[in-house]
Image (cartoon, rainbow, N blue to C red; front, side, top):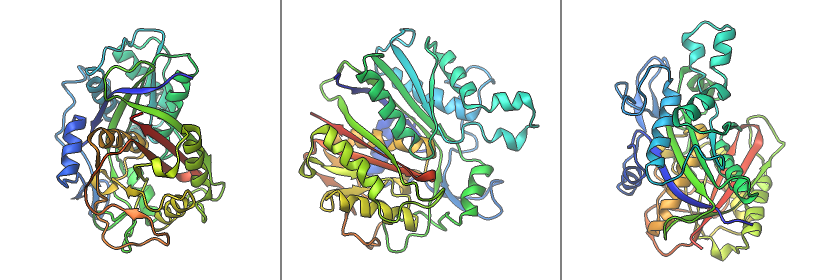
Length: 377
């Protein structure tokens, strides 16, 4: 089976338009989450949003693209600058992950057949693919909040099958009134910067961002990280409530570790979903404990980026890759007092040590779960 390497990457977020900018901000404890007062909500809320005056003009040369599509184009552009992948090659594919895409158009446009077509995810995917000249029809992955992680797994499997040599995986979401009101209806929004795994956690922050990884069957750089395995599962429990036991996410973790041939001692750290809701964090802690990984460092990046929905798995995977390359495990901002039933090792401060492998987990509405393993080896 072919190896799959990450040969280029990008994070385009309110913290910066390059991966290095983003990673350095996290090392210096800089968060994109701020208090906002705008038309999204009647009351102030905390989120990681681009400034109102932010422009994508250097990436798009006309007004045919929405903010969502412009964000994807910006991130993909920055990633492609780092490698020599030919997007016009028939063995190159574009995969896009998102949860809501252009849902904001429902707030500003008259709903008719034309809008129905414009708002479709495949329409955005085709526009982005055409912008760069991809010759293959793009693939859309939209499976709640595991979309970004699932897109990486799909890309890995397609390369391993021998069908493609290079795959550009990009994900994005932007925060709209529709999205904010939806999470607010669940009473899931925090009244401050969120606190993953903390005893005082009270909900999530939302965020907008894009991220891209370029996967290849050919290693291009000495420090390229390998995507070694991935697995998905479903709780079959509730449309919005996670598993009570964590067993289904544990199945993902165990399957990914088994496929990679790794033991629990081989895992350097876990990049958790860590939304800072009461039930998600508890479920993840139970899954980590079932996997026998309670002594491995765990972090969540949600208090830095907010929950970026379809981009989250990609944003957090890119940071995990940089953590492996720099032998640096980032802390869980907002975490102070242990607040889950299992004795997992939540990072409070930066850890510098040699690490070879890490696990990225994700979970989402509908009970979906994913786990991806990245490795230096």
